Amino acid sequence: MNYVIITENDISPWKDSTGREYHFPKRYLKYLTKGTVVIYYKGLMKNRSFASRRMTALVHYFGIAEIGIVKKDTESAKNDYYAEIINFKPFSSPVLAKQNGAFLENIPSTKVNNYWRDGVREIDKTTFDKIISLSDLNDFNATNDNAQGTTNAYTSSAEGNLKQTYSTRYERDPKLRERAIEIHGLTCMGCGFNFEKVYGEWGAGFIHVHHTKPLSDGEGERIVNAETDMIVLCPNCHYMIHRRKKKTLSLDELHYYLKLSNN
Image 1 (cartoon, rainbow, N blue to C red):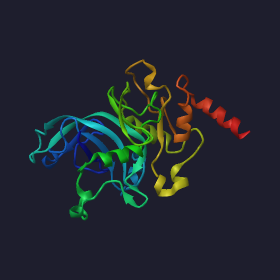
Image 2: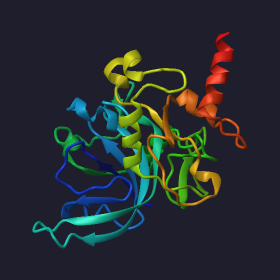
Image 3: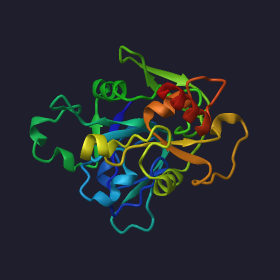
């Protein structure tokens, strides 16, 4: 199995669609073949207007997927290509590219000065496992509002060994998440926690988005209103809402328990 990092920039001339399609030049064709497992990456935020669309301002990894069908961009004069993205599963929290002063990716000595210029970077399984072991792919596994598709999921055990599991997950529209944040902001609607106020630039733009009626309830496709059907929560409140498999708390119920704890 092949593993690569694919970069998604805040500002880009490429016609990417997160979790659906990746637009790239021919030089990356040898890496982006059908079945290749990819990890999504974002570089350092350079424009604060993008804060609400990112998990963090720092360089980080934010999801996993696979390459589906690869086809030529017939409208490109530069011989560019499109890769179908399948089985996309975003991380609930960002995995920072630099841990304890060292990058997770191994940078070859011949590429020290230009390694990060490559929008697509091949990695080995050890690096892949290292990144996945730091993600929270196991969070909200049974009722994960942030999952997409009905496909294979890649998860890791506590020891970091890659394990492939099969489960049913439910498609979401990334634009709805952005719209929900535009409407509700970046302060947790449960406890009032704001990551930027507490962590400064490190926490800027980070929040979870929760469907008030889980997509996993078995009703299938439906219209979702970002204002009335979605709320923003910190990871702690999000986990508490999903803590019981047979019971998803409403926001009012969450407030009730928070109020009890403060009395």
